[in-house]
Length: 371
Image (cartoon, rainbow, N blue to C red):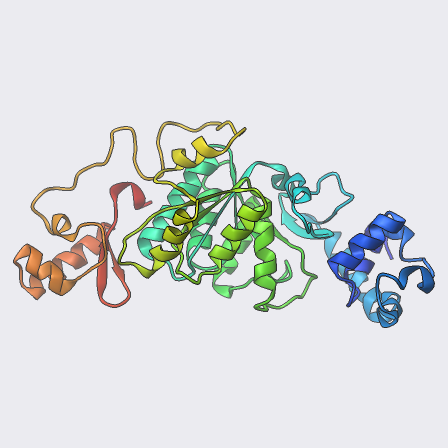
């Protein structure tokens, strides 16, 4: 089946339905490497798994799945990295339940680099996505690899920012590594597979399932030295990643937002319970003990050396403030008609200085956050 019986044995164990991570760790402790397990008598393995599971271990469906995985891994740019592999990410060895193996497409060496997780809302604002991309780019330029989950919104923006710097990016999937979810990120996933790395602990062909994504989140935080949350509602899945990061002993960071925005509530809750409030990429770097930035200028993701650049005074931007606002409020503040305000907002939006939000709201984009 393979010139590498060790890898085939790892796959055989992980692809057998009913062998969970706890049972597999128990067998590894008892018998050593997988090739010492798969040929054992049923009586020796029965303390760890039920008889029907042992029957499945040598079944034709499992053999076929192993063969498919080996064929997949034989292609250039693909790898199956096991716990026994020297290239297995050291950071994951620190967490309580590291996966037995990872399917990887792309630059597997990135799994050994110092990394930072960036997560947040799938329904992010334009300002939130801009912040995620600019923070990720600055941190990637500093030498950190950006880890996220390839979701829409903050995740996708963070991956794009990571790709813009030498640190690059790691996408951790909640599906098989051969399935892109959501499909709208297919082009981004292909770019990450070429210039970064896409990984998953789930078998090839695993379709999206809600219960797999929280499991995936422990790898996002586990691969990283810290986790930065940018825009998260009070019940956001990003808070699961942040909580897992804290449990794993990682630093947790959060960017504050408007008190009127539902997408700020998750970040504010994190800050209230001990997450570090950050306003720039340098704030993150200052908190990461033992990490020395490389190639990082004194610029930050939200402000440059010359400080904030003021917009021309007297315009509609001065009336907007920094919170989302509707046209009626702008008419009142600026003393203009709705037609005048709408025309000016359109001009500013085309110029990349204002973003239209759901619900008829508009928000000013800071000069350093427009990409």
